[in-house]
Length: 296
Image (tube, rainbow, N blue to C red; front, top):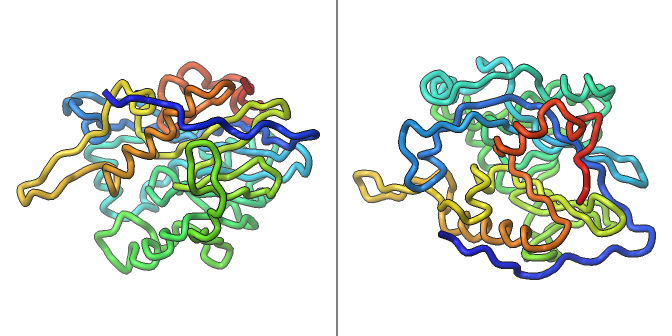
C-alpha cells in the first residue's frame, strides 16, 4: 500500500486575501471498469461514477471559469474508436451537460469567460460549442495531440476540434514558474495567491481564512488511490510493453503521492473527477451550482 506523507504546508492567507467560490457541475455518469484503474480489480468490478466539472468564481473580481466539460450527450460527436468503447465497455448517461448545469443555475454558457480543460480525454472535453466566447486553457502538450487527432488520424480518440483553436491558450512549462505545497510547478492564474496548478489541475483557496480545494481531474481514477488504500493498475502485453491508464505509471504514482499528501494538511479538500462516494453524498445538494462546496 502506498504511504501518504505530507511534503509541506500551504502558504498562509494575507490581509484581505482573495479566494475562489467553487461549485460542482453535473457533467454525466459513466460505468468505469476498475481493472484499468486499480491493481487487483477484476473485470466485473465496475464503478458507476460521475465525470465532475466545476465552476469557480473569484471573490473580488467575480471573474469565473469552468474546469472541464464532462461528457457530451451526443456520443456520435466522438471519434469512432470512442463510440465503440462507450458501446462495448463504458456506458454513459448524460441527464445534464455542463452548459445545462450552468444555465439551470442562472449562468448561460455564452457568458463564461474561461474554460480550463484538465486533459483531452473524451469524458472531460464535453461539447465546447455552447461556450462561444470563452478562452480555452489547456496544457501545452495538448497541441500535438490535437494536431494529430481525429479525423486526420481515423484511429485517434482525441478530436482535432476538442477545443476552438482560435480561442485557445496553451500553457508552456515556463508558465509554471512557481511552486506551492507539494507541487514544484504551479501557475498563479489570477496573480493573487489563489492559484491554478498544472496536469492541468486546480489548487484554489476557498476562504480568506486559510481553506483550500484541489481539483484533480484524472490524476487518479479512484479516490482510494489518493488515500493509499489501493495502487495504480498496470499489466504487460504480449510484447512486454506496460499498459496503464496513465501515460507514465511512475509519474502518475508520484503525482498521486503528492496529491495524497494534501490530506495531511488541515483545511484542504481533495476532489477527483470520478469520485463516486463524494458524488453520491452530495448530488442534488448545495455543493452543486448555483450553490458552492463548503470550505473547511
